[in-house]
Length: 248
Picture 1 (cartoon, rainbow, N blue to C red):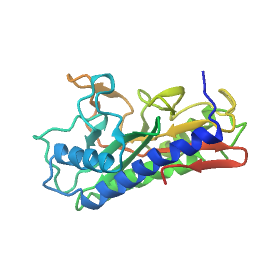
Picture 2: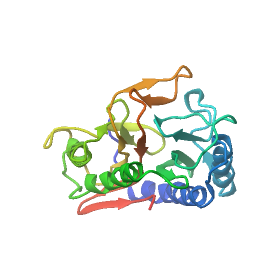
Picture 3: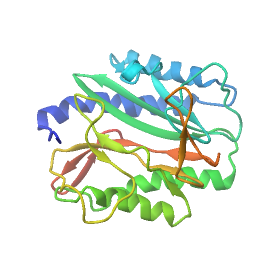
Picture 4: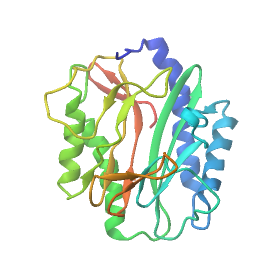
């Protein structure tokens, strides 16, 4: 069931969402070649806690870190460790959540490390653009699957694969709430969204196939063909006349 948020609830969500935004900016200003993914996770943990919030990912369904740090062909849920060192030319998606005031905020950015190949840089750029395509015309009354249709249409126009196995979601008192928000779909279908619905829209786009393989750790998902993937996410509120993005 989709829980439509009151204005009071939305106001309580502003702070964790701001912390998500600022944490991503903090990480983006410091992430560099030579760092381990564990060091990236430590940046996330330190900043979120410094803001009086809790890193929601830590302990979620047993997840062992404060952020998901996914490098190159890792689409999502990469577990940070001391062995994975960022190198010039890598792309790395940092997906994180913050919990404060009884509510969660969620966001992701894909960062380019050093000199990234032009075709990979374009993938990162298009993935971000997919988010903004998704919210064009989005407002109260929009059918849910219009969001995924816009993402899919734009990404596939570049020949990219749109990940099917993982989706966006509602968010609030729980980190994952109804509805699921796929990045593909048939326009004009799905529940019509109500004002006050809070969603995480998160295009996950691959340079090649959309098919993924789950790693033995039960978390990390990599592209089956080993080609890179990018990920971009924001938390937003559906309004009568558009959307309000809480993590920008």
